[in-house]
Image (tube, rainbow, N blue to C red; front, side):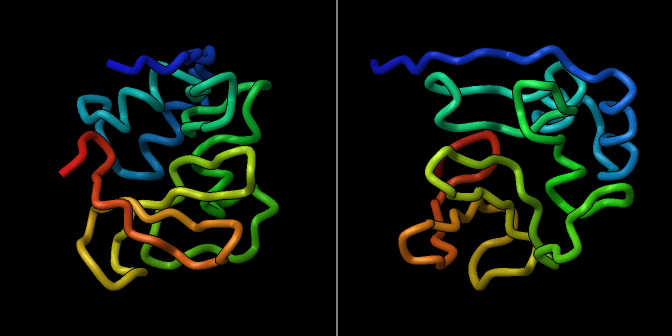
Length: 127
């Protein structure tokens, strides 16, 4: 079994509550737990960055990456939620109607093709 290194970032407690309320999710869900309990998760020394409630070691929180009020993002992906990014310029988003294909599946914006590719997995498990 391959094990990836990871680091859980300290959460922004005030920001976490705002994220949960704004996204209308519970801390009982996997995403809600990650937001409440971490500022984000760095996988393989930061090659992959899963968004949480924000921390100085990750650029923004899940709200700022999705253009919620108080951010500099002017264009959002209607029908998708950015959940992670990687160091080579790729972005991961949960489909909520933006992409053809299954709702709640993750899509990856590949920096080499600039096209959203289905990943055949949800936020919590591979199908």
